[in-house]
Image (spheres, rainbow, N blue to C red):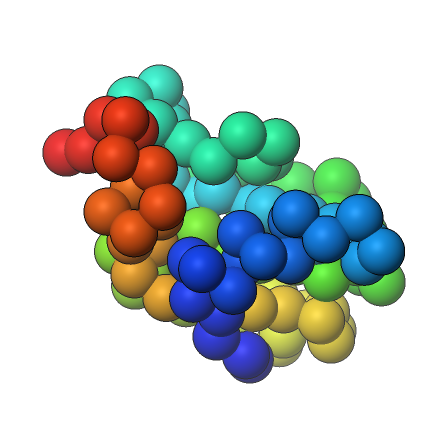
Length: 107
């Protein structure tokens, strides 16, 4: 599993010459409702095993949670399921808010 920082991810998303990764937010519903990175797909961590069919095995997946711990576990799980292009957002959505989007709600 690779790790990506919030600034690296933002630069990637802003680069029209690169295919965008799938942003997979694995936090619980109330957390996602507080804040999320625009364009992210929301599947709570406990639902991932039953919803694998919704994820493209060939896509680059960037797993996101609050601080990066749950998303790291999901990324490891996905790799064990055969997904080969999995990344974890270091510091999670909190790092995104602090480093890139001061208007984003935090908790």
